[in-house]
Length: 432
Ligand SMILES: Cc1cc2nc3c(=O)[nH]c(=O)nc-3n(C[C@H](O)[C@H](O)[C@H](O)COP(=O)(O)OP(=O)(O)OC[C@H]3O[C@@H](n4cnc5c(N)ncnc54)[C@H](O)[C@@H]3O)c2cc1C
Image (cartoon, rainbow, N blue to C red):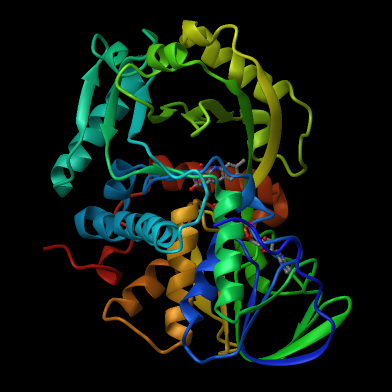
């Protein structure tokens, strides 16, 4: 399916609807899709274009693995909790792939196994932790020690790797634009260039119009305080991406001897790379100085360093030219788990915030929509607990007033990822 509708016009005049969805990234699009055929009148607004923010800028790795590896989920939530949350993201992957196949969306879908690459002795330990976590949850994987890594990736620089299946690569901007077309065909009204500037009761206002809705689902990024106090829960990580000229077939075979994979390494600020359908290498990463910086860095020096670091590890790409780069901010919460809630002060409004990863966003958007549709499932309350804004963090939030949001967020992120244990397990799934 190609893009038939270029940019939708902005919202104008006064409008009424059953459901208003604000934000057309992976989450808002997934929410809107749930209403096609429901008989509800639905309006979808975005201040940019559909997929114009993080979703469209992303590298398109579709994997349940996000900022939290499975071993980290296991340490934090125990067996059942880790399984629940891994399945959340796995379900998000399935929803996206099913949509692509069902609606024949032309978005460069690639079946691409994951390869998590260890760097140095600590990286090899991370790989083994992941292998053990997968074993304990009954998920299959293949492990490669240092001597075996070159059989899957043209490099001798990694200390080991773990590979697993069920993952894909996708051009996420084309995916978003494809879903937009499906929504338009399904009777959803979409307005782009329509930023919600204020919200009062059941009515939101943009610069040229307003919508009054029975129910509202906010799936926005970089939320502002004037929309919700839950904007306080969200910060961001900045990451950089670049794309190369196409590789020749022999270069591809040298880089990926057993076929293309999507890869990332064990560094805290990790480097990630995958091949697109046109044999271009997408490489992403960042550095400590800019990841949590308050303002965007647009200079190429960070991505240049990432690319040069990768070139040192993979000799066959030494002379590969990278033709374009961009940066983006990934919204995240203090513990890297999304916040999804029904606003207690406005019970007709849902918020989906801080989803790290396209699959998480897709699941959470669908989840919010199914609750608005009253199409609840047995596991409903469990997810509201996982995604509740009332979660525990190492550093208390008042410290943000003293030390600043950036520092406190970074510490809380690191704690959640590397240290936090047994998170309120009795409130989530009961361990068997
Ligand atoms: C460079 C980069 C690479 C990434 N790579 C990957 C990857 O390979 N795999 C992966 O899974 N994830 C990746 N991510 C993360 C992923 O893109 C995000 O986690 C995901 O897209 C979040 O989706 P979302 O719908 O929650 O948010 P967004 O895509 O940010 O959507 C939110 C939407 O809300 C709109 N909006 C905000 N405020 C308003 C308002 N007031 N009024 C109207 N509209 C508003 C925005 O314009 C935006 O379109 C990457 C992110 C970046 C930046």
